[in-house]
Amino acid sequence: MNLPPVYAELSKKLMMEHSKLLPELWRMVCDEDEANAVNALPGTAEEIARALGRPVGDMEMLLKRLYHRGAVFDSVKDGTLYYRMPRQVVQFHDATLLWDEAPRELIDLWVRFMDEEYPQLLELVTTVKFPSFMRVIPIGETVAPASSVLSSEDAVAMVRAAKTLAVTRCVCRLSVKNCDKPVEMCLQLNRGAEYTLKRGTGRAVSVDEALAILKKAEEAGLVHMTENRAGMGNAICNCCDCCCEMLRYAKNASTKGVLAPSRYLAAVDAAVCTACGSCADICPMGAIEVAADSAAVAADACIGCGLCATVCAPGAIMLQGVRPEDFIPAR
Image (cartoon, rainbow, N blue to C red):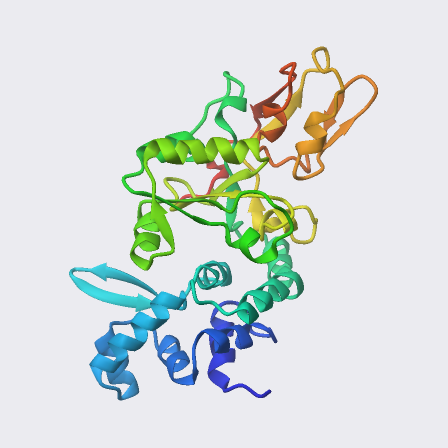
């Protein structure tokens, strides 16, 4: 099926110029008329209407439909409502999968895209050392007392500091369905929470409920992650290694650039370790090997999440700071 060129143009803007599947995903989310409006962004409804020769009222309705589907995002500046297209393919993926009326064909094609074409982008990111999309947040109580912890790498501190909190379904487990771990687990903070509440794709939660979700995530063996930048992020994702669009590819040397580790590394006290193997079982990266007398951590594979320490009954594992504060990119 030959698609109108606008779908390829939109895919190019998401760094997927040669994709065969992304243009089809765009077609499932918006018809050609709507796609032309997305391609004309950013701007106000009035500006896009003028550029395309359309009535302003019609354009306002069109952009609201696309906002509901996750194809465009909005912001208010000086009292004026602006629209923009997704900044990158992961944002497009996540937003459209939370569209309540998303057809099964769209969900299935996203799964295929993430398996077949997404790795090509990640190989580029890894090769040119482009900043990782996300970074790991260590589980606070697993960090050794002597190690300093920034507020932006402490999930509990991030939740307590947030003015608005919400929770959404995990789009990875929602679509891939490789496990039965809890789905309503992705926390949204401040602007992220405001967006999902306005769009109706999540629900508001209190600080206590958000902290309970963090604890539930740790008990389920999920890894805390946020945007790879200093300061307060807009989300805390709680992800599994079998469905997650980040963790799955962080295991592969050619695509590991998608995810930055935390500033910490798991360290084993061999004198305390009983070699029970619980740490190796829960490690999402396969970074721990257990010999007859002690576990050992592969430094190049460990992402510093702290899950291993949460299941270590004798307390033989703690996270030690091994990277400087400026390892986290500035905003």
